Length: 294
Image (cartoon, rainbow, N blue to C red; front, top):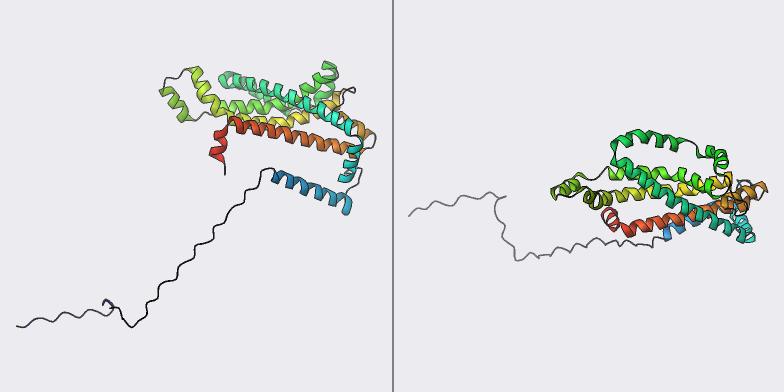
C-alpha cells in the first residue's frame, strides 16, 4: 500500500539531536556583585570633623599665609592663649549670656505660640495683625537700642525685650502655618467620628502642627542669641557683663583675641542649645524622624 512520504522539515526548523561525541560544557556560574556595606559613623563625628577643618583653614589663613591682619582676625593660638588668661572672666560672661538666651527664648516661644494660636483661630484677626507683625519683624532691631534704655533702663529688661522682638516671629509664623495646614484626610476622619472642636484640636490639629512648630523654634533659637548680644551692646550690666559686654570692652582695649574668643563661645553655646531643641523634637516626635529619614 502506498504511503505518502513525510514532508521535509526546513533545516532551520529541524531539531538538532544531541551529539554524544560533543562534550557538554556547563555554563560558568555568574559571580554576584559585591555587596557594599555602608559604614555608619556616629553623628558627632561630622560636626567635629567640620570644626577641625574650619580651625585648620583659619590657622592656615592667619599663621601660615598671613592673609589677615591679626587685629582683624587673630590666629587660633592667640585666641586660645588669651582665653586661658581670662578664663574666669569669660566663662562667667558665657553663663550670663546663656541664661539670658534660655529665659528669653522660653518667653518668646510661649508668647509666639499663644499669638499664633489666636491668629490661627480667627481669620479676621490674622488679616488684621499679620501685616503689623511683619512690619515689626522688618524693623532693624538695633534701632530699638537707645529707646530701650530710655524705656526700661539698664540690665535684664531691655536685653529680654531685644531677645523677644528678635525671636518671636518665626514661632508665630510656624504656629499659624502648622495649625492652618492640617491634612484634609485627618480632618475628614475626625469629623466622621463626630469629634468635638476640642478633640479636633488636641488629637488632630496640634499633633500635625508640632513638626512645623519645631521648625520655628529651631529658627528662633539662633535669633535669641543674636538678640542677647545686641541687647548687651546697648544696655549691658557692667556689674554682670555677658559676652556682648565683654566683646565691647575687649575691643575697646585692642584685645581682639579675647573678643574673638567670646564670639566663638557665643557660637558654641548656641550650637549646644540648638541641639537640645533637636533632641526634644526627636524625643517628642519620634514618628517624624521615622517617616522622613533618608
